[in-house]
Image (cartoon, rainbow, N blue to C red; front, side, top):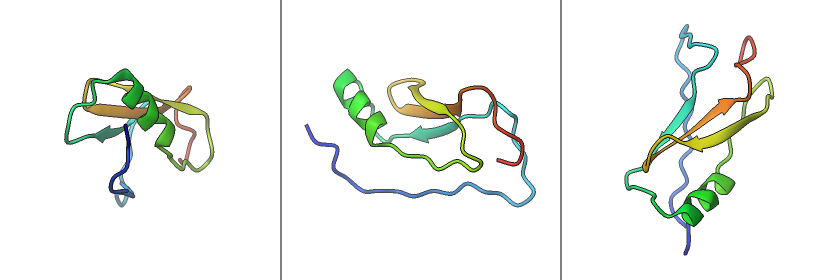
Length: 78
């Protein structure tokens, strides 16, 4: 199976916006991803740039939503 497809780069920076220290980054796919092998391949292909750099992980919320959140909480000024 292939995960070839369009690449999207999204920046969600809102002027003067603040979010909570545990707010995840959520990616919503247009189609359900049920196959566990495909989910793993998608997670491996995903990349997120966080500044300041901090450890975090991807996890599936349901069959169409993947989220990334920091291991602990977002560092101040992220």
